[in-house]
Length: 308
Ligand code: 5RP
Image 1 (tube, rainbow, N blue to C red):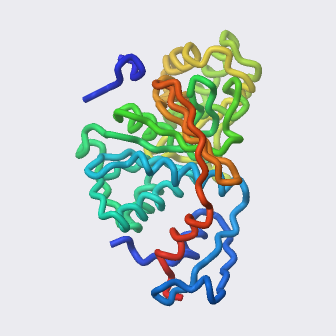
Image 2 (cartoon, protein in one colour):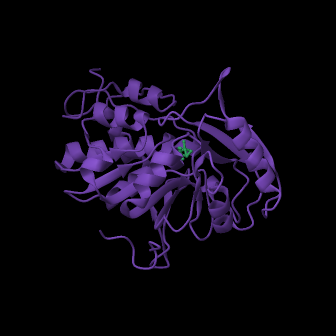
Image 3 (cartoon, rainbow, N blue to C red):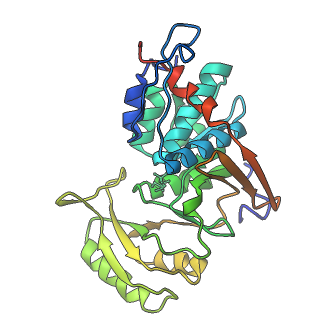
């Protein structure tokens, strides 16, 4: 049953803030002024984020407002999702929320555990209230390309097993038509070259502009997913009919799953570098614009503290 036709119903660790920043690949300027010293005598930090990281951060911050006490949550993968995990950990710490998280990758599992979030498997949780994840592209129907981080298989399983999926993205991820971002396919290592050749042959009959397929590498070796598979990236430039594409490509033996998420995302929270966030709800047909005070967000680092 398509989700949109009714839907499926079915002690924060004292992690150093500079370690948090490093984990997110960000640089921070530490600002120590009289006014910046907190009540507990901790030095506050000012996050010197790029506009794109600010956009990711505000989207993540707004999205965790959807979390309610007692929820079972899907935790996405990627840099935006990593901010979401941190913002969630902050809410758990501040409000005593009791939530269970099902991570979509070993990276997210590690981060969530390190921040004191209770991690369970999907089989333990069985069904989820909400999944929050990033995306590489989203279109006006909230169809997505995902898998830039190589976690598309677990991400798709987890998002599909959720009552709602909220996508968090910076504004640059919005496209009129999917396909500029290379579409990842997860493939079985056995016979991958034959599978790739079959994929290339199949592309000839599909409504796409580009047809180059490349094996994703990690240095000199193939990139290996958490499931022990390879990724073939398809440079399609434009995907004319994503629904048809997804059905056809998944028929090829050896292809485990593709990075197109169709009728899975319910809400996208679009972040902007100036702190604006748009919340677009495809089911309600609503768009709401809000602003998040970026100054508030530095608390996430200051409150976690590094003992400074
Ligand atoms: C990982 C994903 C990510 O959600 C996607 O690549 C976006 O990543 P980022 O938030 O770092 O831009 O699909 O497989």
